[in-house]
Length: 501
Image 1: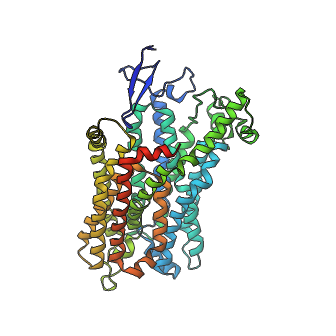
Image 2: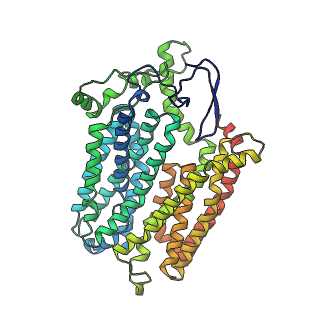
Image 3: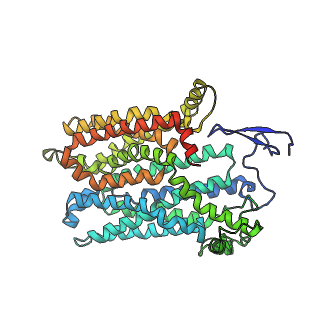
C-alpha cells in the first residue's frame, strides 16, 4: 500500500479522483476499485477464471439477442404458410421487439430474488423452447401461436445482454473494462443484425422454419457454458451492504446453489430488510443503515431513469437509434417483392448479402470510435478552458448527427424513385455507421428498442399517409430536431445535471 495521495485518471470518463491508500498491479497501474483481502472477491480471482465467466456471458448475450429477430429477413416467406398479409407478418417481427421493451421491466427485478446468474440461465432456457415452438408453427392456423412465441422470446432475449455488463463491472478493474466492454458490445451489436443475416442465408436453400432451428446450436451452447462456468460475481464492497453466506465449494453443490433456483446467491434477509424498513426512524443503528442502503439501491435506478438529463439524452436515442432498427426490421418489405410490384425481387441470399452494408457500417464505426472517441472530447475540453465535463463525451455524437439524416434521405429517395439498389446500400451503410457511432456514447437500451418497436407497428400507416420517400425524409428531419437537444446537452448538460439533485 502507498500512503501518499495518488491521482487516478479514468480513461473512459476522463475524471480525476483521489485515493489516499492505493494498490497497484505489477505494471504500476492503480487498481480501481481497490480489491479486498477476501478470496471470494471476484477482483482477486485468477484471470483464467474471469475469462471463462466472461466468454460464457458473451456467448449468452449473443445467442439470446439474435434469437427474437431470426425471421427478420424471411417473414415474407411465411405469408403463404399462414394465408396472411405482409403487414400481419411484420407485426410478428414487432412482437419480438415488444418483448425486448417489456422484458427488462418484468424480469430484471428477479435478480434481487434468485440472482443474476440464475436469471441468465433460465432466460436462455425459455429462448431455446421458444425457438422450437416457432419452428413447429408451420400450419395455416398457427399464426397467433407463432406470434406469441416471438413475443415471449423477445421478453427473455434481451436479458443476458443487459445483465452481462454487471459481470464485467464485478470482475475487472477500471483499466481492464474498456476492452471487455468493447468485445461484449460488438458481439451484442452483431447479434442484432447477424440473426437476420444468417437466417437469410439459410432460407435460400432450406424451408423458412430452419431460421429458428439453427439457433438451437448457439443457444444450447450458451446454456451449457453458463451452467458449467458462470459464477455469482456479486460482492459487498461496503459495510452497509448485506452479505450472503459463502456458496458451497463442491462444484455440483455450487451449481445447484447458483441456479436452482439461485436464492442462495442473495443475502438471506435482503427482502426482509426492505419490507421492514421505516424511513421515519432516525436511530443510526447498523441494521438501519444496511436497510436504508438496500432501499437506496431500489430507488436510485428510478431516479436515474426519470432525471432530466436522462430524459433529454433518451429523446435523442429514441429517434437516432430507433430509425435504424425500423430500417432493418422492414428491409424485406421493400427488397423482396417483385419488380412489377415496386420491389427489387431480392431472394433470401441477396437479402443476406445486402445486410452486409450494416455489418460494414458497424465495423467502420468501431474503428472510428477506437481512434477518435477519446480525442474529440479532450479537444473540446481544452477549447473550453480545460475544465472537464462529462457531457463533452457526447461531442462524439456530432458526426453521426450529420451522417444519419443524409443516410436516411438517400435511403428514402432510393425507395421513392426506385433507384438502383446500390443507392439503398449506401444509405443503409450511412444509417448504421452513424447509429453505431452514437451507440457507445449515449446507449440506453430500453428507449432505443422502444422506438424500433413503435415504428415497426406504425410503419404501414405512416408510409400510407405520406409515402415511402417522405416517411424516411421525415425521419431525417426528426434527427435534425434531436440534434438541437444533443447540442444543448453537450454545452449545458453539466448545469442540467444540477437539477437532478
